[in-house]
Image (tube, rainbow, N blue to C red; front, side):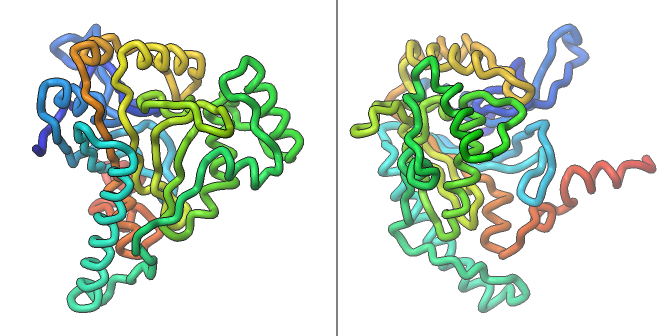
Length: 315
């Protein structure tokens, strides 16, 4: 079922990002935020008994611009009850292989000026396990990421490898930086990155990975040409575990991650969220990929926020 969820709300949840903030004339004393993702609203609908929902619409993140990022962007997100991560990955392979075939046919027969991306979307896609991949690339074993000394040990690895430490050197940002250096460049062809450390995915279910004994998320990201195209995971449906993860995220607060305890969402989980698979895709990046362009502004009707802001100077 296709739905529309609120864009303006008291808080922006569903992802780690800096929101745009505003107010309403009806209650100017309250601060409102533009949504950074529709996720928490869509999962409330699953709680309410709609077992398959999706939305295609805008989200907003008050962050920088670059060839693959614009503060206003379009996403497609769906949530499906009783669906696990393996099923989500197989659905993604089927969807993208079909899209690639359809796009290739259109560019050959109708839209001949569009560059065919020349990417093999034949399933199965490659798969990279997050922690083993970083350990193999750095030739160093990662510390127990749940330990009190994990942050200090990761910083030491950065120093040993002569890597610059991120400005906000929280545990998630350190791990994300290692991924951008050692994992994402490997993902030229369609590649799933799986089993992310627990702290990177506060809304995902998690489990202890056999062998490494690290706590990881039931999550997969699809990367193509070194860029994330799809994010998917099994949704955390325990209100107790979700509260613990929200509390943990509060410890990682920085300029881009304000963190908040979403009591309304926790109350919704107490009513009962069935085992649910969640899937999100950036439509703008998908259009970039299938049209063979490297700049997000090329697939936006009026360009990026920089173009839109410049066009209003004389008004």
